[in-house]
Length: 95
Ligand code: SF4
Image (cartoon, rainbow, N blue to C red):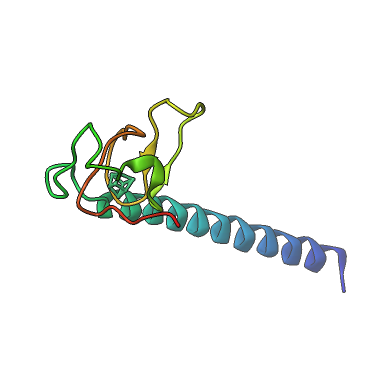
């Protein structure tokens, strides 16, 4: 293979790899937006900032704990900040 052909081949490879990386990056960005868009609003799930009997977010499968046990966390299905002692109708016991 001639030196010029090798340079062209390398250039074509790098161009293709760059395009692939851009597409992958856009895909990840879109996935995140789709995931964010799928979270339910607090109103939809009747979120409340207090427990419902012995059910609360900290004992729910969907809860994503904050940095400390009593700090605000998040939820896999409900948008925004979620208190560990909050509750909603999507509660799923973490047993
Ligand atoms: S699904 Fe409801 S109860 Fe469970 S963590 Fe999310 S907001 Fe709290």
